[in-house]
Image (tube, rainbow, N blue to C red; front, side):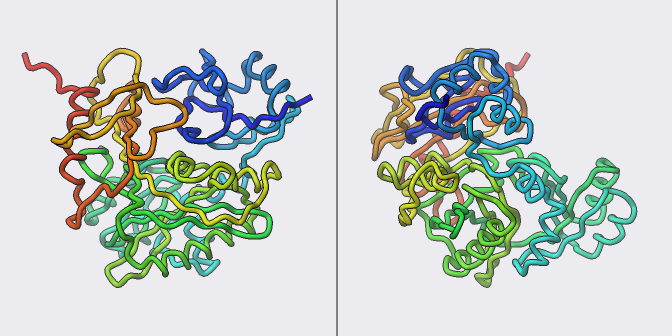
Length: 409
């Protein structure tokens, strides 16, 4: 017989910061111990579905869980939860898989009337090279990939020729490059409606933060978003489309607003999103984005609350050097008078307090992997599009600590 708690099962507990979920994780991400809510299960691997296979996790969920939320649902995870008799609070993985396939998404979204850039999809080879050559400056993407790891900027025909040759035989998409401001909108698809939160600037390709020129590396909820009304209209249209296709729960819509204020939908993420803890920290109990996600699966009430978010985050990705050794320690603190981050206690699963700053350190896991995350209130970038000076200094200091330059002989 299942219990009454909703569990988040994942490699680490970061997505559950500020929430009321119980957490089973393979790592504590350096957070302070919280025996009532956070249980670390060694040997859980790097995916929530791997944790589900562990006997001690299955036993715990059967006794205590009313449902399980995973970062990304999968058919194998859903089968395992069915074996355990525990409901899944993730959308149909087949729906999500189709939508996250970048080649499929572009054609399907265009057919629905959603504004997407001109593109060509198919298997990398001579035919695709010929059909995409007219796009000029473009973006080459493999069918699947996260945080810019499988996304490449095509400046000219020689770039496209090299990428087609390198990934010959792989499904991919080549899309027209859209100049403008990257924006993301997060929402929830419920049974009868779509709820949207306010849009945020999506930090993209900042060299201080990511090795990927088109990789997302943060969310700024305090800086103004161009074309906000038009962005909301496209996001609503996209969310309704996802709901009609059968998606339920949280989703993200990534857009670029061109210089004329026209939004273009670049991709959708029909799953939990990196900004989730920011929403949980911003909302009173019972009215968060995560609460609405649970309502989509009959695990909470649909309160028809107005979603809002006042927190922002910077995500630092590993450049490729060997990182520092030792277990990660995540901390809470504040900025001093010189603009430096000064920690004064371990960060807890409750997240940083209002007006404070949270720093989550990761264990180095390889080039392009997340290395650290700063969670804070207020804007992240200035009018010039660059990080605010004290944030840039903090990021550079973090990289020097976690990914030091190799010693010179």
